[in-house]
Length: 187
Image 1: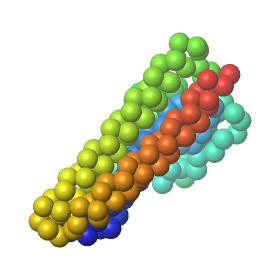
Image 2: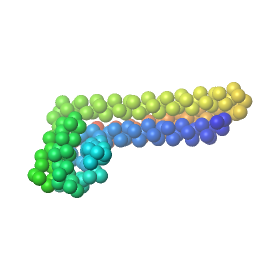
Image 3: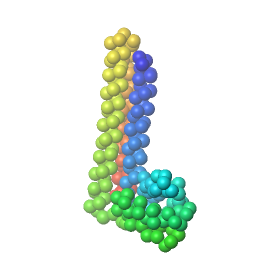
Image 4: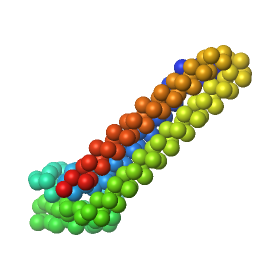
């Protein structure tokens, strides 16, 4: 891989992945508002197969503070309740025999601050990943120049482009972080 375009294209793909990982982590953070994404990571043992909850039940939001889980089969309700309880989300499901309701408790101020810290940590981890990608891209550009596969000017242009990609993707992460922070601090 000696072409600066190839090096930069691969770097951009890796940076996009880093932004996507941060976005996915932020979705999982509970904000006090009900969202079906809160239960995305929950899997149950469905006839010997570990299956995501949304593949065995219909998830809906009947009101701002409740997620409703309506399984296709009533006999798996206790399994769903146990899976939600053991998922360490701080949620307490309640069943009426046909539907599992998951009330989403309001967040207190201290919990909100803790969640904002967690959001910032995810953001910083994502930014570190992006900077590491930039460093790798610049190393590849320098190796290509040493191997006489590209000129010094092309390498410098490539380094500038790598910095532009870094700035762009870091800004994407900052946008995701500020939206999530606002969502968390909203009472």
